[in-house]
Length: 135
Image (cartoon, rainbow, N blue to C red; front, top):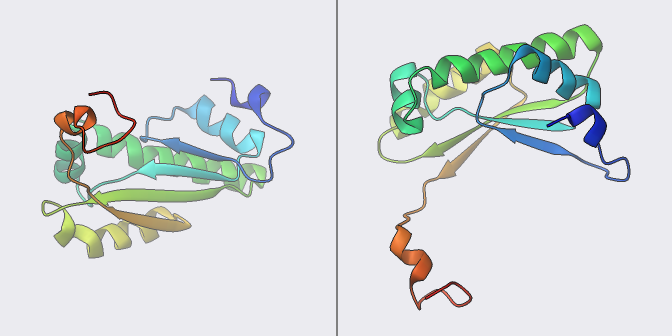
């Protein structure tokens, strides 16, 4: 996506969610475009936890690198983007919350959001319990 050319000038606030897969050029464009907020998923304080939850080896490294890239270009270009990490919590990573907070401080994130994991089954989407969903 070409963020620089897709900026909605009549919006008062723009937010860009990511799963942490930003390269150098994309990070630079996000800052240049003037996006107000970027959310980066970071579901664990360690690579082992985050990579397991995301089911992708190297996801932790890419997410933390994305935060660092955004920080770099924000400082270099005087951008005002808010850098936020978002963690989905469940029984497997709840004990890492204090370490996630420390990591967020070390990375220089502006804020962190913790969301409880909601139970989900594919069969719920076709259930008659959910009006408006296909049955």
